[in-house]
Structure formats: structure tokens, C-alpha cells
Image (spheres, rainbow, N blue to C red):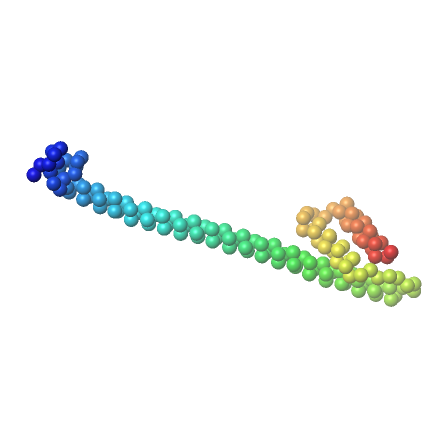
Amino acid sequence: MVEAGGISNGQEAGTGGSSVMSRSSRKKSNYQHWWDAFMDAAMAGLIGAGMGSFITFFGQWLQQKSRSRHDQMRMAVELGMRDQETAKELARIGSKTTMIPPLAAYVIYHVRVLDHIKQRAVSRRDIEKISNEFEDILSGFKR
């Protein structure tokens, strides 16, 4: 049967009168739809894995940085305690009365020394500068 326009029932325009090609093009589009869905899921998985890796790496870096600072502070406190004990020993040995600076003065000094060591090689000028700063800190406590 031919309808108006010369197209028979069951045939589509532009297919050359064959309904087989329209089925294969539908299958191809179904295949393409499946492939697109697969690629969308694969890309989402890759992006998620990349973000997870980055966040894990960043978290580890922050934790290491925090741990390093914590260890540096612990070392400064231990060194400050030793310096204060040494100052107390020297005060006991000496004949005159001397004021022993508080532990905080020694800790501040050692934090600055360790910061200089961490940042670069320490030069003679750095040691003189830190020593002058320490003298200023001590003079602040003597007042």
C-alpha cells in the first residue's frame, strides 16, 4: 500500500525502503547510549579516585607538617629545661645571688634556634642575632 507522498506502511523516509536499516541504526544508538553511560561512570570513577588520592595526600602532608612542628616544640622545651637546669646549677655553685629566668625564656630561644636551623644553614651572623635576641628576652625578665 502506498500512502500520500509515496511512502508505504512500515517504511521510513530516507532509508531506501528498507526497515532493516532503521533497526540497525536503532541498535547502534542503543549501543552508543550504553557506551556513553559506561564512559560517564568511568569518568566519574576516575575523577573520584583522583580527588580521593589528592585529599589523602594533602591530609598526610598536613599531618606530617603538624607532627614536625610538634616535635620541634617538644625538642625546644627539652633543650630549654636543660638550659634552665644548667643555669640553676651554675647559680648554686656561684657565691652571689642570681635570678634564674623562667623556662619560657629558654624555650623561646630554642624555638628560634631550631627555626633557623630548619630554614637554612646557620651562619655566624645568625648565631649572633639569636644570641642578641636571647639577651633581650632575658633582660625583659630581669626587670
